[in-house]
Length: 290
Length: 164
Image (tube, rainbow over all chains, first blue to last red; front, side):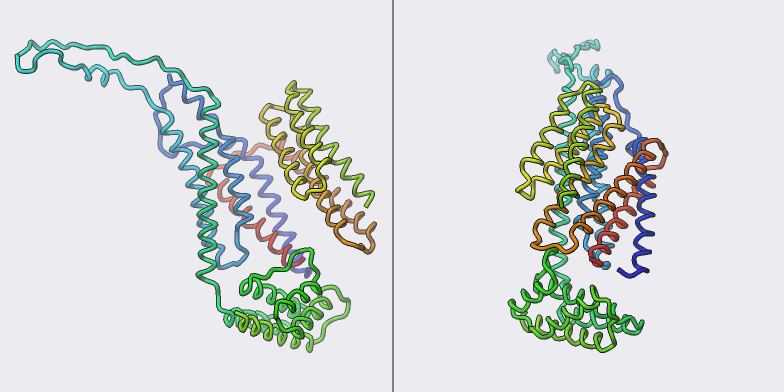
């Protein structure tokens, strides 16, 4: 890794560490409350069953955030759309849980409403003296549900919400990937632009490395071929040749990559030209295979 | 390789024994069973790749249960860090074992153990400091910070992946 890149990475890591310390110090005192004022019946014992679940909501949001880190695409142009999905998902999760809270707590009927429900027991056609008769409603005695029911219910609904959002995200990602899959020519153009920019900067090693990474990207996006972490570049080159890609450019680019990545010798300008030519040939071969 | 295996066993013992001892001290000893099951499962099923991850998750479940039952952080933090380190080291051992011939193996193992030790020390320090700190942030700010962390962590992972 280049020193500049390493420095930037260390800086980002430091910022993340500080932010995580702040978050960890702030989360225990964070209380999740609905935006509007809800008049919760103070005499209902259900309130205590479902309101004391801040840790569960926190756990679900943490699960969601971790899943999003795992699912988030690396491409910059898709990151914004994905961020919106993350924000929407978390907001939806919180709203869903608040709605669940709202629905679970059923306030008792006010006494004025109970008294107005008195029904006439006499013939309606015969004029009766206006005597207010109030028949008391037989309200069954309220038995609060056990605490674990509330916990289980919230856990199930929360997990379902998270799974639902993740499934939608997965489908959207697959759909988006299919719909916006760039043609190979465009991929090659993008690779060339990036390489020209690098070459203008004068760093030959970067050009060679970038060529190899672009080859990996093109193969991944066009053919669905991905190098497994445990496979060496040379083994990968053998696999690619077996799959029908031209042997010479693949081997040339692999050798240049190995030299630039692991070798001590400084690559010359001819190496960059060879790398670009090999990459162009591999992209063309991919196009022909497709 | 021998040093890595010994360190793994030591870390796993720490990951199981320290939180289990905490549950005994707190008087919620049934939770200790989770740790013992996780440890036995981990040691007994090392021939399958998925066992390491599943045992680690079981350890985390035990730690969460213990924290809900008010077992002190002094017991749980070292257990969590030791479990994470054991998980990492287990993957490292499996990876080394999958390669037929490793050049400068002892140097590689020593470097990995040094880095892991440093990481464990920093983790203990940071988590210890965090457990003593209390801040009040609004929900919006917390959410914004969490999103920045998510994006930044993704950036770090992507950069490390690209640089590998």
